Amino acid sequence: MATLYRSLERTVARLPGMGDAVHEHAEQIGDTARGLLAAHRSTGTARVTVTRGRVDSFVNLEDPNALSLEFGRAAGVSDSGRAYGAMEGLYILHRAAGWR
Image 1 (cartoon, one colour):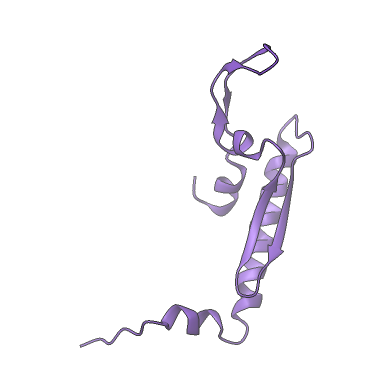
Image 2 (cartoon, helix red, strand yellow):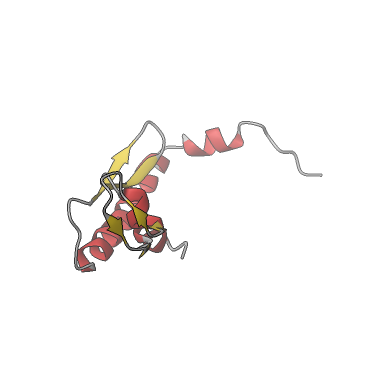
């Protein structure tokens, strides 16, 4: 019978070289995401960054409208009364990570 240990994921995450391997993979995803963002005709101020924590690494889409860029938005009217159209999401991070 197999025995499962409660802290197995913590033990594996802290193995020598694991943090470097995770960060290297995050950098690869970040490079792909930067390419996908650059291919879009109107990138504005959006940028892709990779940050490293104590154990994990993170690929970030940084922009005031990052959620709309990633997932899209419905048509509506702004607070100032200006109408804007719907926009399909670009799914930059999803595609870079192979999730879509």
